[in-house]
Image (tube, rainbow, N blue to C red; front, side, top):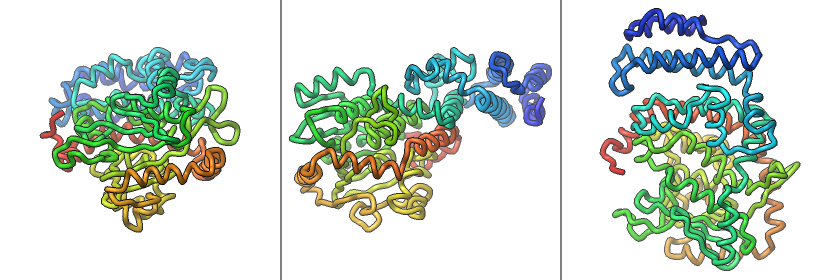
Length: 467
């Protein structure tokens, strides 16, 4: 028994849980010995007891104050024991899952495979699916354990780099789509559309009902589009732009994007893994390119395949769409457009903006944008620290063509070389990996925090939004 589990006995008993069962749970808190099988067995027994006691409490939305305190104690001590197990054994777990790094697994495949290697270390797919049926505020947060596992994987240089490498590989569906695009010059993926125009491949982001917001219906299509755009040999440069929306207020206008779909977030339709798949997947590919299995994409010992990316910002780039601008080589914005990172109003961490934004606008403005909701007009001194060029809204199409011509006229080879030279001094793969470790843990707790729900109800009128 540890001081933490001993102090939890009171809340458990106060909630009406049997004292004998509560004491057995408390006394079974595992102490790591360093021997994998023994530690996995003892830890698994503790996690089973934790889940069994939690299952005796009412559903989260029906718990009284004492029952909420008991649930918090059970979950907190279970998280603490997982942290201890992972600190000792995460590398052997990862090696078993990847045959000592000889095979690659994407994040979603990795975490569900880990549930079979060490039972209850992370939730099974069935457990995640069961909780996914509830609104975000009614979830206990079984997915937090996925965040803890990934945080420990990413914290270790060898296996963390291997996972980053895995997420930079093209998705399995990509080769066939690359051939289709090369043949036809267009590709419609639903939430993302690719079109060849001269030297450029244009990627339109499409979710018109939600102002081109990102959610679980757009993520895979966007990453596939980035794969195809990057690996396509018939074009030299890529352009990302938001499509025309059908929202009453903005009908007929292009919008770069409204960030994460807050309606889906409130309703529990954004899984935790969405955040890491997004930022270690297509957003990282915008920055670093698409990797091959044979070469670690760290810019020093290896490299991927990449293109220069232009962002064309119409109307606004909010949240995740503002984050994407920080990975672009050139940002063209309409004179009436604005940027914002309303992370405080949402109660989450804005992706990798905390890492990237200070090098654009400085630490003070970055903190104001992230912590105090400062909005940046694109056509302002601060906005121009992110935006390279401003054009009137009516002239955006012509301006995009002009920028494409200007950036390709000197040839792609030197441009890519300069891109890599900037990147190695600003955001090495090792720095990316270490930030991703922090992000995995902290975003997991934010995603299931009561403050998230309170923020969405207060700032987004989430209770009255319809899907």
